[in-house]
Image (cartoon, rainbow, N blue to C red; front, side, top):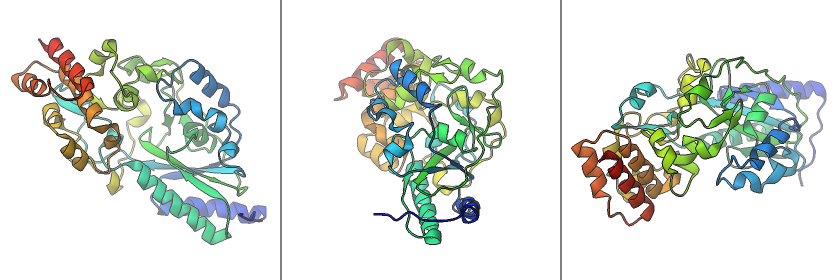
Length: 356
């Protein structure tokens, strides 16, 4: 059983300041502190789930209100530290240029390097332990996309950012090119002032979405979102959406690319997020020829690996079907016509029929 740490307001204020210094020393771009009251965000979450906009992401609904009630997830929690780590990769080929070449593969820029989950979780754990060294034993738990946590709502409440109309988290200085992580803890630290939104009347992200998945300001129907279709969806990609996917084989950055706040976002100097295997500028046919062993080996430590080789081939088959009918592309698809997976064969045959 963890004993409650007793500190006066002056000690807590100094600790909060120290935490932000320690966080920057660990590579975080910014930190903020919020209380646990997410009652204003809960109705939006419940309505989104009721509309079925989460698609096959059953885990979004299975945890009920634990996302919007932090103390239900970790009893005793009174504060949440929200931490931001920028990821915009340095020297990546221009996204718009890659999207304009239909024989190339577009991969969401957050996935060009190593999996961010381990990087953030390790740094958050070190920060939590640094706090323990300063105050003694206390109750905490770190999260990085690993539990029912309303990251965007917490980031907004902690003063780090605001929720954009595309539902992503935005800041003036880094746009949306960053990851978030949290520390739930039982220390009554002083909280930061929430940041107001700065989207104004802009709707560029909504207009830019290839599948019109942003069905209203701040509301995304995941079932139409390319990131969902290429990452979360386990089965067949809906026929009517396949032509709209273009050459996006893992995720989609279009709403971010359209956002004015992203124009001057800094690049990350975190080596874990450096580009691997030239995934920022690679031909679809080259990736399509990877066998399962090559997929596992080359994408070890990558967030892409979690979709598995079968869905990797499914996604690339769709992109090839949206490319030009060159002999190289037709040949690559023909090589996979007899693939053991029915899912892969179905998408390959669709692609060949579309090209022919």
